[in-house]
Every structure is written in structure tokens, then in C-alpha cells.
Length: 228
Length: 115
Image (tube, rainbow over all chains, first blue to last red):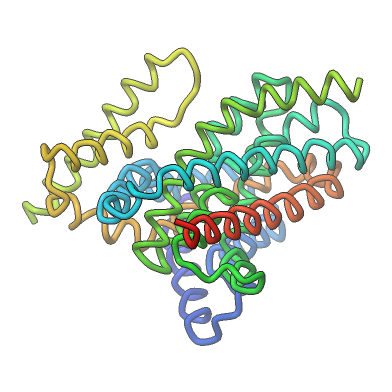
């Protein structure tokens, strides 16, 4: 799988991208389908993940520089963003707080213990931040890593059609919502839509990560006081 | 070719800078986001021109989604955990994500109209 990993991933992705461009159904999201088919392939042939991960490492390696490159759309839209900093900050703070107010009690109501609640709490922000928050409030970072990716896939595949469905039509609001709810994967989808979507999503990605790191430990400890 | 090289070098240097700062911070924060912020500030104060970075940044961002696939395939390592807690995970992920999206989208859309 080591040598096949890179060409196979690229081939599968562009294949599904072509299919998606013909049909444009959100559930045919190329990233979602590529992940599912590659996971399926590993399960069917009982392949270990590590050789694939090592072979596909050039792609993973490019993720960090790609996040740095998000400075470009952010800068190109900066003059507009500067005038809206207050509303942007307010919307992201409310979004992060709401996420915690929904996720923690929901995990508790579903019979989750403190570790599960802590692992799910920061689910909407980018992986490294989410994992370190989880770690600091007593969760399982590996579980958080899985949950964060699932949130990102869901948001990237269904975020834009959902936003249109509920009446959010403004590209700036759509971008901000994608970045706030579905971090870097949502942002990768937003940037495909337009530069403006990408800029607002990048900004929400950054602000939400910072706000989550500040707010999550406070809300989580308040919950633990009440629930235990 | 030289233009591509310059663009790649700038992005890489900002990432390295981000890594240096991240290592010095007393808490965990992604080096890539620190690099993003530093590059954004550099554009604004004019040390770096956005055109210098675009030759690499544009194609990279166009295919950014592709870069997440190997990490997503890594979910197979967590299948046990996902299977054990699947109901809570499903509820939190679906309800959490769509509520946050709806609220942030509507709130910001309304704030834009008011301003």
C-alpha cells in the first residue's frame, strides 16, 4: 500500500470530483467518498493504516503550508472584513459557546461519562487545538481527533446546501458559519466556492480556535460542578 | 519556475516561523495558524507582496480538500472507539454542527443587514 497510497488517493479524489461536477449532489462530496472508499478498501483487504499513511504523507505534509496560504484570501478580503470585526467576533463567540452548550449536555444525556463529554466538547475546532483542550479537561485526545474529522467531513459535504436551506444566502455569512462549525475542512470547501467564502471561513477558523481554547475549560468545569 | 520557488519558500519560512513561536508558547496552538496570522500581518505592513505568494498559494488552496483524505482514512484506527460510543458521537456531531452553522450564519447575516 505504501507505493500505491499517493497515486491512488489522487486518482480516487479526481475521479469522484469529476462525478461530483456532473451530478453535484452534496452526498457525493469528493472528499467524503474518497475517504469512505479508501477506508472500505483497507477494511476489505484487512490492510493496516500505517503504510498508507506513510505513502500518502506528501499530501498530509502539505496541509500545514496550505493553512499558511489561507492568508492570501484573508488579505484580499481584508478591507471589507476590517469594517465587520465586531459582528464577526460576536458571531464566532456565540457559535463556540452554543457548540459547548449543546454538545456537553447532549453527551451527558446520551449516558456519556466525564471523559466522553470532555472528548466531544471542542469538536468544532481544528484538530491540534481540539486535542489539547480535550487533554487539559480530562478527555481522550484520540477520540477527539476522530470526532473533529467527522465534524469536518459532515460540515464540508452538507454545510453549504444546509445553509441555503435554512435561508443563509449571504456568502460572507456562509463562509463564517462553515469555518466556525467545521474548521479547516469546512474552510477547504468554502474556498472552492469563492475567495470571499474562503476568507470569512479562514477568519472563523482562527477566531473559533482561540475562543474555544478560552471558553471550553470554563464551561466544562461549570457543567462538572452542576452535573456531579 | 523561480516565481514558484519564491512563493514556496515564503510560505515555508512563515510555517517555520510559526513552528518556532508555537514551540515557545506555554500552551498548544497550531503552528500553521500562527504562520497564517504572521503572513497576513506581513501582507498588511507591506514586507511581502501577495503576488509573490499566489503562484503556490492558489493551486494549494484549490486542492486543499484533497490534503485531508489521508487523515480521514486514519479513522480506521479509531473504529473501536467510534463503535463503542457511536450513538453519542452521532448525536453530538450532527446536532452540534448544524446548530452552530445555522446560528452563526443567521446571526452574522442579520448583523450585516443592521450595519
